[in-house]
Image 1: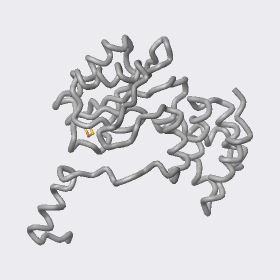
Image 2: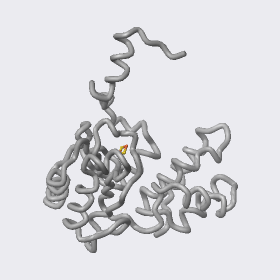
Image 3: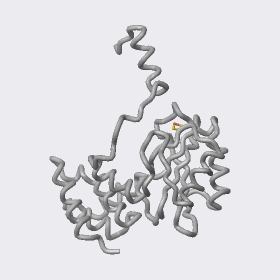
Image 4: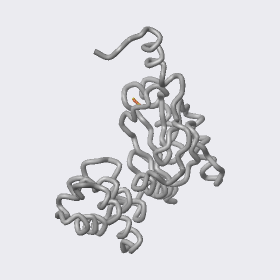
Length: 210
Ligand code: FES
């Protein structure tokens, strides 16, 4: 699929935000991914062209970060954190349940292109372990049954909300937001008392950083 003129304009707009244009590469790759559902050779070439760097330099970045996919993701990206804390608190069981529900293993899409399942690393969300992400939106304190219910609702086309508020859209839409974060969709900061417990106690005790 050819990169559209709209996306090319967006890539140039992102590059213009930075004093050093090559600093724009990460959001540019998200924009390419929002159009192509993966990072293709053409997407790499267009980024290189806009930034005046080589395709090899773009490939080095795109192949380093796991959020950039070199195969089509499909409609929804499902991430299960199976790092130590999430794994111990139930992430491994969530993984087993979803892998069975979807009939796929790690980094595999379902045959209908609706879901792509991935074991993900720590999302810095251990306060609410185990966590699952749907198109990078958090599902906190997830259980095997709860995770499967999310999949069932998405299959039925029902509205699903992250436990932190945002409505789940799809992978491509989230990728576009990662390229253009000021899209007006963010509302209240998604923090709760559990996340702020350490800070609250530090304040109560008058603790200060050295
Ligand atoms: S170990 Fe899963 S979010 Fe940190």
